Length: 249
Image (spheres, rainbow, N blue to C red):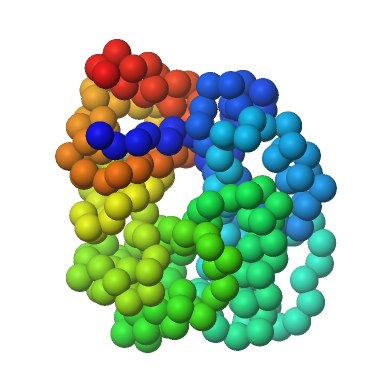
């Protein structure tokens, strides 16, 4: 039977409620700027030992320069902005990865999530670049989950090849038919709402959606499944999903 780890992408309620009622939290602050060591250390201390943090990799790893995103940096970043993002293997992007890795260490995170934007499109160069990046970066025993957005899902065999050649896990929104390769022992589902293009954060999942989600997870056959809600109603929807599973179990 699959071991379920249910949580949210970011805190939606008081931290204490998340610690009491969820198994995990995907830290979103690390995407905008992971240089929050003191805060992360405090979260780790106050959370139960069994509570799991996962970490979203810094945008400087995955996203090319964007003025609006960079406006959210807590501290300045020096150097040529064009060197960052899109899984480039260079001193700038590898530095950003190592800062992410440091935050993961403070939070004792098992998983680092790399979410690339639609602008990181499928191409032979990006295919080879992704393999090179994931095989280059340090992991220190952590799992890397890659959630590609955009047209990569139209090239599923290439996704499978990247996973096979680099040891990353493919993650996706399973309710939007973004199904990772079925040979993965661990499923990491990030749920962004339904309708409204690739994401619809204002969507509230129906009971029928949650029943379908449970069936998808069971059918996938992984040993472990992270079910991470990433919508406005993430806390409530995650709690409803946990209650549904408890009733059916």
